Amino acid sequence: MLEIGFTGTGDAAQIPVWGCRCTVCVRAKNITTFKRKPAGLSITSPNGITLIDAGRTDLADCYSVEKIARIILTHFHMDHVQGLFNLRWSEYDRKIPVYRPDDPIGCDDLYKHPGIFEFQKPFRELDTIDWDDFTLTALPLNHSKPTLGYVLEYGGNRLAYICDTSGLPVVTKDFLKNKHPDYLILDCAEPPSSNIIYNHNDLNSALEIVQQLTPTKTWLTHISHRFEHWLLHNPNTLPDNIQIAQDGMRFHLLANKTYEQL
Amino acid sequence: MLEIGFTGTGDAAQIPVWGCRCTVCVRAKNITTFKRKPAGLSITSPNGITLIDAGRTDLADCYSVEKIARIILTHFHMDHVQGLFNLRWSEYDRKIPVYRPDDPIGCDDLYKHPGIFEFQKPFRELDTIDWDDFTLTALPLNHSKPTLGYVLEYGGNRLAYICDTSGLPVVTKDFLKNKHPDYLILDCAEPPSSNIIYNHNDLNSALEIVQQLTPTKTWLTHISHRFEHWLLHNPNTLPDNIQIAQDGMRFHLLANKTYEQL
Ligand SMILES: [Mn+2]
Ligand SMILES: [Mn+2]
Ligand SMILES: [Mn+2]
Ligand SMILES: [Mn+2]
Ligand SMILES: [Zn+2]
Ligand SMILES: [Zn+2]
Image (cartoon, rainbow over all chains, first blue to last red; front, side, top):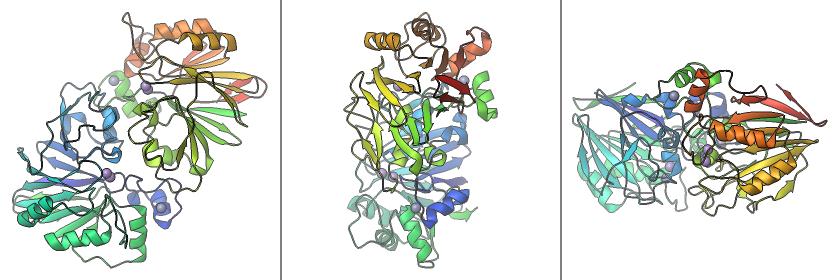
């Protein structure tokens, strides 16, 4: 069994946005469960914990170093890697492998001073890697820095994590149509917009991707206060099999190709 | 009156260090008051709050945007600026001025996407600036990036904040000897060492600076778990007028050239 957890479901501003007095941000300020930290995932198996992205800056409080098997980065924007900067100075005697897209610049001095992190050879598009706990395939996305989505396969389950993208590149769309993921976690940073949105999906683009891939279940993530505000004023617009993810939400992928929400 | 507060007193690893089982880190894990966030200062006057450095990543929880008058950076290492990356996306309608050393690179994409921050013309060495609440002079330090210390003057009090330095450049030493600060907050990242320490003071270098400047009172900051561990095993080695700073510690500078610890 794999346990999938949302370590964060917010955009780079997080929710509450500093100084914002909108309904969404005031609610999140008052009620912890409505807060949104930077988007990321934890994948827990008997072999340890895999983090997809490290945008939370309290990872040292959340995870013991012994349990982290590996970290997988979607890209080197600060809201996805900022949590690594203090962790790297751990004096723990095992290096932690960090998987990543092919971005020669990375973020600030992470490559120069990786500390306990060991950056792995970058994924090329459609590279697949098999670990004891699950299989992962890297998929290129449309974003302002080299960015990867991932398909995770376990016990007949196929889960796609597609974060920080505006639509899908053809190679990724074709791969996913063919792979037919059962579960989809998808960037939907913005409310429906009549303008072209760069770097992220608005709800229109997200729904179009859902229609193309027809997963059993979709969670939307990388939520901005703008989108959440729109949702408050447009309730009941999403079909039942599309859910807005929340920080801390967890589900299990079982070996018999089913999932259970916790 | 000015209230000076230590927003953080730790090094880039912070205390507890991730995965460390030393006495210092275990104690800090169990007792919040022993934690050390990245080094920085708050200066509160009737006109608002000035932050020196922004290495804490929970600034949005700690300070309302309306009250921040300005931010003053010592340098662009991540442990001094990482807190700006989410704050910048605030949609507040006033820009917050950020003062800084002359570092054309800065940190990651902060210059490219400053959001609500307005980076000011860099300080040149010994530049002095007068605000309603206090006067500040910028002093070059010895560090691996362009780095400034600051002397703050208020009501006849002279407070020097000298963080992230290994010894002092001649220009700064001469200026400070002449200025004769009453209060000194000083980098002391490492225990006494027989090796040359780059980028930071060990206790020997810190004590040498104290002897040269003879302030009434000194607080040591940017403390690593190594130095704190050494202190646990070498109690009562510091003279009475040198204190190890703690996160949250505060004192007042009064108009009549005195201070009161809170
Ligand atoms: Mn992002
Ligand atoms: Mn991004
Ligand atoms: Mn530094
Ligand atoms: Mn530092
Ligand atoms: Zn808001
Ligand atoms: Zn320690």
